[in-house]
Length: 158
Image 1 (cartoon, rainbow, N blue to C red):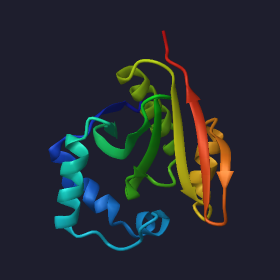
Image 2: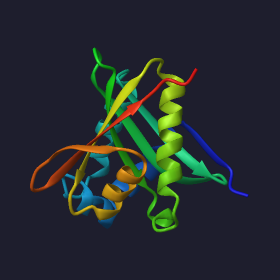
Image 3: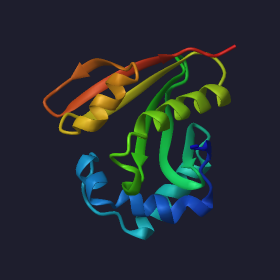
Image 4: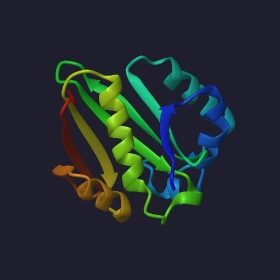
């Protein structure tokens, strides 16, 4: 039986997240493809951790780190967040990304009251992520040659 839990990212997750950020596949699907030095990562991570407009989660399955999801508040008037996710290279291709995304959305809903609009910007060449977001109910609201922008309305659970 799979035990999935999701919690806030802590300082102890920093090195693992840096390793995942530098994974070859992650770099290819990121908007910035250059490798990230640990010094750059530490500054980025510190800024993320102290920003009250960002919620950063890590999902674990049977005590193994599955992936991270980050929600950046982009419009407080409309309670809109941009989501970024990254799966552990070890867990890719094992049909767990949908669980990770769904658990992330549920956790955000638990932590932030009210209805929310979730935006995802995904490279068109990232076929797996495009499929994931579409299969989880996200709708394309904008596209250009390189990027699909998806939207999802997350209703607050009562």
